[in-house]
Image (cartoon, rainbow, N blue to C red; front, top):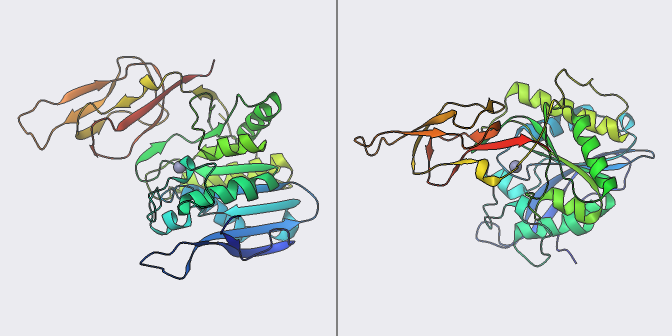
Length: 331
Ligand SMILES: [Zn+2]
């Protein structure tokens, strides 16, 4: 049994808001609950779709798109049931942190979760055992958060079954972002995508920029992509058309060694941008050592050609921190 309790009836037609209440007794809140907000918009027959934002609490483009839909959609605009969780890791979102301040938990590394575990594990358990099995489709909106910046991309997991692989790829294409990042064998089996694969439920995630705020272009992109995915599923009657350049690149992590990690702590003077196409040997940036002013800067070069899917948003970086994620065209 889950200790979590919902304050709303997920099956009720209409537009409703409530909370998933999480009991966790600590110094700040000994007898109360931590709240994870839930919004439902439902009318008539149709699919049940869960849209998650704030799985990481410092990623805001997805939650902005979700709250626009919550503001703008009336029950009669949907066919089926839309369940919106804009701050899925409520404590992390409340603290503006990637991971929960209650337990350090990363919700996208917490599945299948634990009903008797820490707060993040309890949320994962409730999603995995209670909510995801009720859904036809799950859409999980991410971005680079405070730490990094991604080229906007949709993330279908494949290698599950021919039916789910195709459903996930179709969702990814429907989002109409410029890049599809296919998740293959390097996907983490503790993620939302993996939780849905275990439940046999179609799922697509998205990375929608980053930097720890809301870029207006990225938020518009997030809203349009979300509306297109919901239209593809049959939940919304209309959606914006696919933009030019949609789904132009299908990429995957060919080898984690393609990524550029910091060889030492220092100041990363970046010379690349998310979405750049690079060749092996191209300059990625310089690593300066302001704390050791006599030490010469290092030239950092890409080990492998491909696309820069993401880069760090940080200036001062630690040794072995990710500076740039490099992916190759999917084979
Ligand atoms: Zn994320």
